[in-house]
Length: 137
Image (cartoon, rainbow, N blue to C red; front, side, top):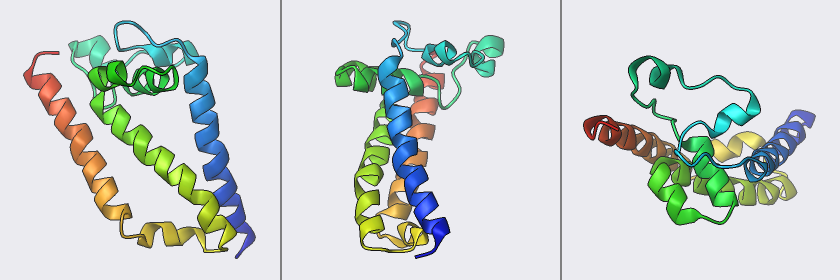
């Protein structure tokens, strides 16, 4: 294993832990949108201009809700956010296994579950977005 592989594994493990810690620290916005503004990020541009959600609207709120122990509310706010969180959590749990087995970081992309998971998440995100647009949300 190269030093780059160790750095990528460490970044993956620490990165998800940082995202989870941040989401646990945030207070989920009751509207289901805007939780990310607590991080001094700007409001969603698509929402601000057109009053229509972008594909990721509600993701931060869903993550925060999950880490506050409210999975059903998270599912209602942003079903795709729950899917992204679950896939990220599964990868985070797997990373130490690949690291301890001294597999190159790139082996993650060759795992049987990788492509179906990525394609499934993309379709889920776009499907939720289309449903929201059609529903006038």
